[in-house]
Length: 188
Ligand code: GAR
Image 1 (cartoon, protein in one colour):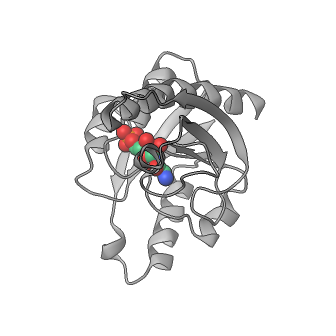
Image 2: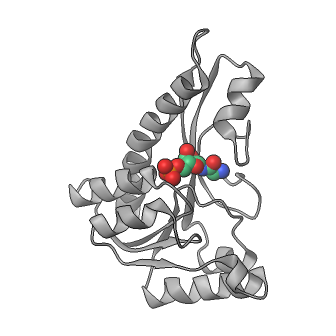
């Protein structure tokens, strides 16, 4: 199976997946790493793993539709089977969704449907809930909606700072995303 990873920023989840692929824990090949930010740190991580990296930005196109068409062409060019979002902070458009039905997966740092959006960890922390977690789901046209594949909980202790919660969530993400991707790939 040929995987593309789409990421906007730091790329720690990309790295966890790339490492699992390298260790043959996921029976797939990462054929493409795409970032919508040319200076994203994830691209440096991609080079380290000798994975093909491509990048262009929405602002380089006259509109979102043209940006998405270019992205779809890229996915076709690399003959991608499965699209994995790892901190890709954009809504996926209709054309892309139609081209990859049930083949676009996302990770979100909260227990969806609670705390969707850009700040899942902080929003849960500030709401004062006693537990939050990580969700992996198929992508649809909404913001962090779509059928849930897996969820795991993390407890928020009274003396946890936001940074403590961020660490716990990211550790869980780096374990859960490769594990679930391995299962998905095996089921294909
Ligand atoms: C991750 O925590 C991921 O769950 C989140 O962005 C972070 C990216 O970190 N995604 C969302 O919030 C999606 N709504 P990374 O770049 O280090 O992998």
